[in-house]
Image 1 (spheres, rainbow, N blue to C red):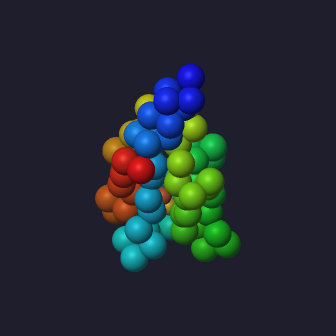
Image 2: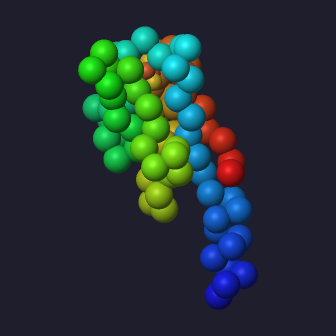
Length: 77
Ligand code: SF4
């Protein structure tokens, strides 16, 4: 069980929002408020250090695909 838990953590999906590319459309927040929040200017940032909780992997891919600035990327932790 311990080995399994560690394996999951080692392959956890994470997202990253590049603040230099984000233009504050808030589209990602509208689609996945569980994964990102926005500041007062609408610029997005990752919640929970970007870690994508189990079951939200498709939403993570959705916001990657729908960011018009290509500001969100998926990284493997
Ligand atoms: S959709 Fe892209 S550009 Fe718009 S707020 Fe989200 S990360 Fe920024």
